[in-house]
Image (cartoon, rainbow, N blue to C red; front, side):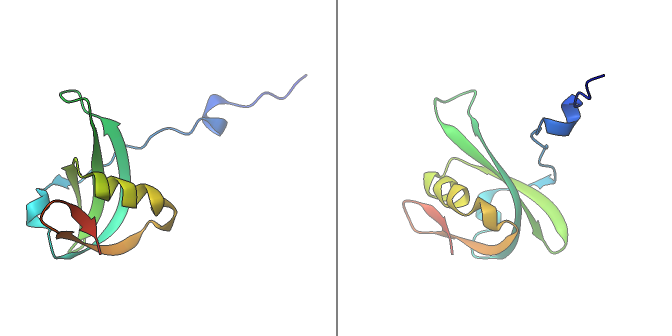
Length: 97
């Protein structure tokens, strides 16, 4: 008899990012611990948006943003998660520092 794998053995599902929803402006210039992320296509605009999961003061939170710079940075350094970062407003864009 052939030993067949179970779907759950090889299927990598996307885990839901949970936490209290906050606005990006409320966490600017504050150190956060980035714990997860997801990039999705917006239902309203023909653009992507970033869901960023993080911890601040030992509480899990999420923030949503369309910042292309943040999306590029998180994709480039996703293998480093979890990491501490500060999001700064550089006028025309937001970025991790």
